[in-house]
Length: 352
Ligand code: ADP
Ligand code: MG
Image (tube, rainbow, N blue to C red; front, side, top):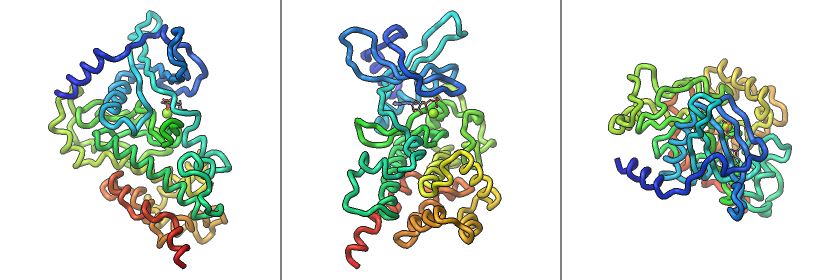
């Protein structure tokens, strides 16, 4: 109950807002369940700070819950949440939920990845310029390594809190110019398993390009959870039984593949890859053995990158993209993987 008391106290002392407090600016995104705008505060003399507003329909309540939980338990994993409220209106039945965040920056990971400069366009933001390395595999590997590490770090925070995101994709990873790290956004499809919020998966919300093959995070045999927050004691058991966090890990694995293989960065490229992988029964080694013999230079370069340092990159990626959730690594275990302390080949090539 601590959590609820805390939430109540926090709410009582928090700055609160209403519709008229905001001046709506540029539209940043539009999904099936809401529209997102850049906004600022209307009141004269209020801070000039940029904010983000999402006007959401029925699922807004869940998204507010998730964001408040994240702010208390693992604030650095996600975009800074400011406030959420229900805006009643005569036009829309039941009203609209308004969610407000700090504006973290212009670019999502998707924006960076769609540029020809990727991954060098991210380098100065997270590592500093060049670091004396020439452009090439090792330097690219270090940048990609750093992005994946930040992504796993953020996910580990969510998972340790009991939240599965379920919509991990480059469009939902924002670069925070203030903190100079990648953060996760869009908890609209997330599930909080410790308290049974949004426990029944909304499959139709999920992006088929990045979803793990199991699709449902909980086996269909598990009894449907109560929707009120009474399942606290029960949920850790369910968590261990079903390993729902591994659903997000699969998506991270796909993002990792997209970073390494430029051909997978387009929608069509990714869809085609998913088809190939399915034909290989979701076995990456099998996929590799079918495509490598007739691989062009881009694909070959990707395998070369993953083969650096005795193939630890390939080892990590294959431990994320697996058919069985049970056999996938967790975010925490992945962070301890030797891929992340290999320092590229810097040390080795210096010694040689
Ligand atoms: P949707 O449900 O439309 O996918 P998102 O929460 O993913 O909603 O937001 C849509 C887009 O708005 C994002 O892809 C991103 O470009 C931008 N955006 C969302 N939150 C922020 C934020 N805190 N700072 C900057 N940009 C954001
Ligand atoms: Mg989104």
